[in-house]
Image 1 (tube, rainbow over the protein chains, first blue to last red):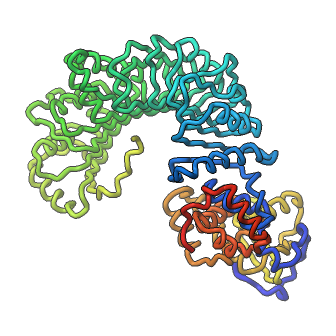
Image 2: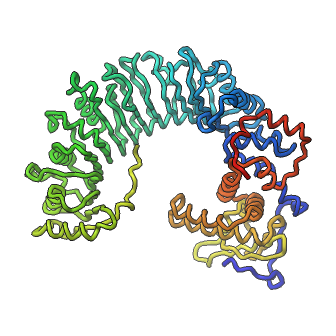
Image 3: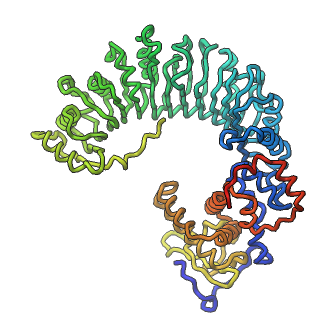
Length: 470
Length: 167
């Protein structure tokens, strides 16, 4: 319907709309300032600063740029350019026009004096910065500028500082919704005080935080919707005698990747939708504290027992293998409808673990096994889990090549026992689909598929939705 | 505004160079300037022609193509998906820098947020890590600095002029 008709043919009436721009040629070479600034907003600060040499009109255009991102790492600075780089940060923050700075991000590898960093922070805050992202090495007693902690404009705050997290007495971050911290926390009460100053916090990421000085912290964050805990393999040192209790009755998403160094106890998670648990065992400390690891993992799982969708990593499974009394220790996941379990290289007892999880999850509707799984057919339990009889509708299995007796045995076991199964989706390498089909058909004969409406689909692995979790 | 049960409404738009466009209402309503016109003039007759004195036919045709596709994407729940990215990449591939600038001016005047965002980002990507001379040529900017003045500016942000692409 976008046909162009000649004006003479139409009898439509005209109205007037806005002023007419003068000089057609001129306006092409002179894009309006707000459009130029819009373009600048998509450019890294290095490119933005270069535009000051274009012409006199451009010389100070950058002073109203609203997104400022200085990343020393990205720019591969030559040693003799560091001074020029830092002077630019001064210029952009301190000579900015009165308009707002929406975002200020600074990532430094070099250590610079606290006063200078804080002059930038306070400038950003005074320009109503909404997103502040600082990643920098600082000295032990560094305290961020006090104005940051009472900012009414900041809604996203990301701090990555290799030092103690120090802050002034007054914390009132009345608009802070997203907080990412990679810091060493101070004493318990101060830490609690900080979080109580964030009354509308919705997303919290604790990335490799250090809790060496903490024993027992209680955080009440009723507005929290997403909590992510991430600890890399080399921190902290062993299991700490530290318990963190998080009350978050509106939490919907929980992601946990950690070597279980601290005892994390989420409470009242009545709204929890999805959880990802990647709890791994730090083998350096395994000898002395073997039973501590699975116990902490189980304790964590007990706290999230009413989750609807649960993903367990290979490491979590390996950690759970260590528990002698798993059947008794695992909670009942009564709301769980979707379970995804990753079995890695270590297949020891994987069948028993899976059956144990299925027995504890009576309402599972869909089960995903994305990694190789070689159950030992002899050990699969004879008692069919409850969900097989009433709920289990979808099963997704990946990495099947068709020549392993164990994986086929599990497939057969499911097909023969799940009464309401609707769909089995098998992912394999595209070129091998036909081969796998044949293999499975041969190996599974004779088979009695229990659910009459069950469809078995073979799909190309490359179309599989990638795992969104790290 | 069209009422339920009626045939879909067509909006008439007239460009600076005298071309008349018939555009489906949902597509025309992507143009904030057109939308606010009809919001303010609820009793405007169905055959009202909205003049667009700052837009000529060529960019308007391009803009209609873009908005039409995006209205459909949204209707199909495809917004933000790969399909959209593919369309956008294809859409921009054959456009010269001049055409891009024409589109940007038109999208800015018509006030189409989504398209403006996409176009300015596309231009930014074409300018990333380019030399001062390249950017001047791109925008048709005349250098009105004296050599001394330009040298002083370059000296001030010395690090920013390191390691840019060869033209």
